[in-house]
Amino acid sequence: MVAEQDKLLRADQLILLFPLWWFGLPAILKGWVDRVDAYGVGEHSDRRWGDRYGEGRLAGKRAMLIVTAGGWEEHYDERGINGPIDDLLFPIQHGILFYLGYAVLPPFIVYRADRLDAAGFATVVESLRDRMVTLATTPPIPFRQQNGGDYRIPSMQLQPGLEAPGATGFALHRAGG
Image (cartoon, rainbow, N blue to C red; front, side, top):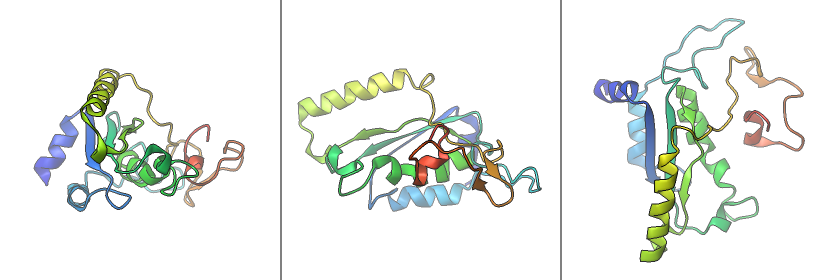
């Protein structure tokens, strides 16, 4: 695992490409994440609560998910049967990647991946190529850093009045709601 940690520390960017599997990472990828364990604990005091959520060992690096899903795009929105894709990916993007310090880029999702014909595949390839060209300049998801003043320490509760009107759930943890 030390060799895997060294790879992460040397890389400027991390891309995790996987099929959405039971609303999360496939077990083999989740096992790799669990074993690599590339984060540090850091100081815990009344001013700072560890080195994580944007401040971990991998701060200054960028990460992005490329996810294939069998369902239609409509299945993964506010009213869709599977719920919003951003909510499904929050535990990975925020709870793993941002926790470790990465600036997390918006995901690239391929819907109905198991039903793509040659023309559909060509469209996905072109869209992904376009996305990869802008990888270094794409603004990251504006997750709130835990030690940046948005959360009360040590309760780690969001400060009152920071949420955007109508924001609830995971959206509260994005600057601008």
